[in-house]
Image (tube, rainbow, N blue to C red; front, side, top):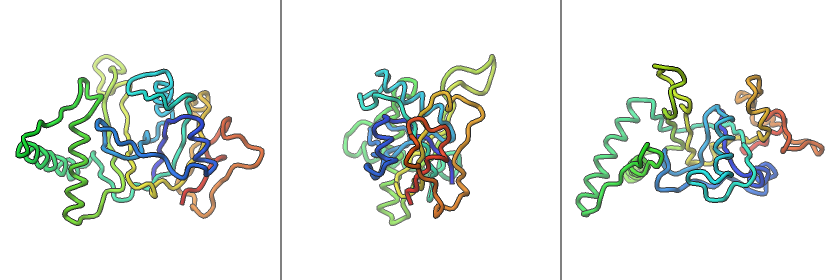
Length: 230
């Protein structure tokens, strides 16, 4: 189990928590960094909130779907995970790239490329989706999720090996892996270094739910608004 955070519009977030929306919509852009699925920032509510803020302000790839920034926290069972920090997963991607390249060349089509600065990863998305299709055709188990670490931004100090926007993303393909969700909408709470997170070791048969008088909009702790999705 891991903790993931999804930046979205407040209306959507509260609809998910109230059960009016049964699940988050999968992203299916041709430039998605980890292929198609529901995206979460791994262990980083602040980055999820910044993403929602950027979209609300009309930033890159904004589609006008976020008006009021909101963050959903989630307990995620990665299941059968394509973990791109492992050599086996990277080897599979390399093979999938060759399959995609050969297929497109045979058809007389161009191989897609990643955009400048790799902010629009059309090639990577196509390779990952090709890998999923290869496994499907071979009758191999489908990946429930994809996890990858990315390095972007400026050096955090001169000569640093770390950058200001380094992060890990989780792309959930099987929505049944999203086991629980909680509200995380207060910017001052998100920015705190002493925040509390849902305990992924808690049995899912004992979820925390909103009390009739509680407000998901002003929740100070995700564990106070945990809603089971199992």
